[in-house]
Image (cartoon, rainbow, N blue to C red):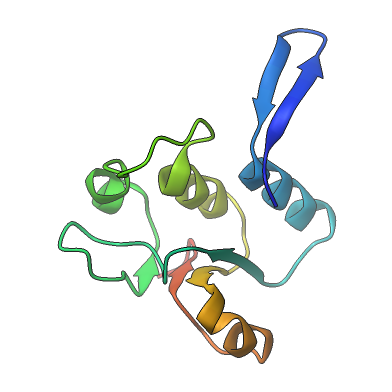
Length: 115
């Protein structure tokens, strides 16, 4: 799922992020679990280790704000912030973990608002 340029009456042409689409759909469908399959095995800390669980943005903002690639839709930082607004456990993981996720396992980085 990728974002795209969309026309908006109040803003003209603007970017609609794939992350915004996912969070909107998850809310509308009352999803009980969300998985974002990425090119990375999860969200990295500053030492490039995958973070197991994120419950707040502030403690990890420096790590996710230093992406190597430019991403007009916000990259990993936007994914984490968007998913933290949901009341649903979310996971960011890579393609090698997809089957495990679909079988109900906790994979990659879990993002939730509960401790």
